[in-house]
Length: 481
Image 1 (cartoon, rainbow, N blue to C red):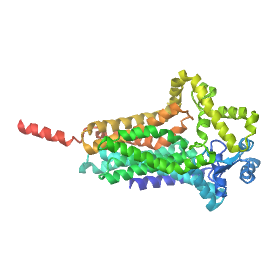
Image 2: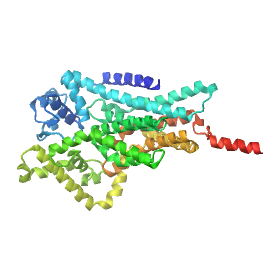
Image 3: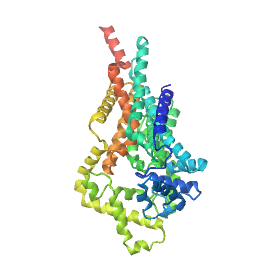
Image 4: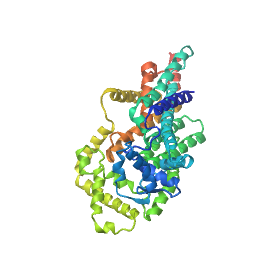
C-alpha cells in the first residue's frame, strides 16, 4: 500500500513538473553527456550499430536548426568539435539502447523527446516509492505492536515513509535530470533496487528466498554498471560488504559473494566481450576510464581541490593531434585507443610525481562530494546521521535475537555502507561537484525517513523488545528469589 500511494504521488508531481518545464519536448542540453548518448542512440536506431559519429549530417541537422532559431546557441561548441567516426566503447550501452528503442517506435522528434523526459521522471518517482517502502519496512520492525496505539503508529509510519518522496520531489538537482538525457535517474533506480533487495534478503524465512533476493540484487548491479561504468570500481568494496552480512557460516558468505560477482559478470559479459572484439585488445570497459580519470589527476584539478577538469583531456588530444604519427593512424578508433594509452601513461606519471599530495586531495574531493554544508542541506545531513544512529542503536538492542539482529545489521551494512563506499571511491578517483552522490540519494533519504520516525515516536530507540533469552533468565531469577 505504501508503495502504491508513494508512486502515485510521485508520478503526479513529476508529471506536473514536466508539463510546466520548457525542456519537456526538447533534445538534450548542451551541457553534460546527453548529446553523446543521443548520438549513439540515433545511430543505433538507424541500424548502424553502437556507433558514434558527430559529423553525420542527419544527426547534426537537429542541433543546427536549434542554433539557427536561437533555441540552442550553446550547441555551436559541440557542432564545432573535431569529427569522430567510430564504434562507441566509451559509453555504457543500457541508456542509449533505451533511447534508441524510443526513436524506433516514435521517430526522432518532439514526441520521442517528451517520452524520454517522462521516463527520467518516472525513474525518480519509482526510486522515491522504493525508498518509502524501505522506510516502512524498517519502521514497522522498530515500533512496539500496541493495539491501543495502532492508529497513531500507522500515521507515524505513513509520515516517515512519505518523507523520502517529498525530499525527492523538492530536490532541484534531481528534477534537473528529468530535463536532460542523463543516466542518473536510471542509476538511482538500480541502486535502490539493490539496497532494498539486500535488506529484505535478511528477513526471508527460506534459503531459496534469500538466494533469489541476492541474485536479483546482483542482476540490478550488473544493469547499474551497464548504465554507469563507474560502478564497476565499487565491486571489491561491495563484495567485502557482502562477506560481512549475516549468514550461517563463512562458507555461505563466500558463496553469496561469489554468486553475486558471477551474476554481475554474466550480465556485463556481452558488453565487455564486444569492446575487446572491437579494439582487438583487452579493454573490456572501453576507452573512457583513463581518459576520464585524467581530468581528476592533473594540475588544474589539483588546484581546484580534485574537481574533474575537461582541460586535461583537451590538452592531451591537442598534443597528440600535433604528432604526425598520430595522424598516420588509419581510423578514429585506432586514434581513440592511442589517446587511451597516452592518458594511462600520463596518469602513472602524474601520480608518481604527486603521491605525497594524494591524501590531501582525496580529503578535498570528499568535502566537495558532500557539499554544501549550510541551510537545508546541512539539516538533511544531520537527519541522515540521526537515521544512521537509530539503526545502530536498534541493532545493539536486538543483537542477540537471530531474526531482528540480522535484519538491523544488514540494514546498517547496506544503508550506511554504500554511501561510505561512494565517499571512498570519490576520494580515490575524482569529484564532479557531488554528482556521484546522486545514485545514493534514495538510500540517504531512507535514513532521513528513519530520523523522522525517531522524532515522532521516541520509543523507536527504546529497548522495547527484550530478547527471549533475557526474559527467561529474568523470570527464572524472580522465581528462585
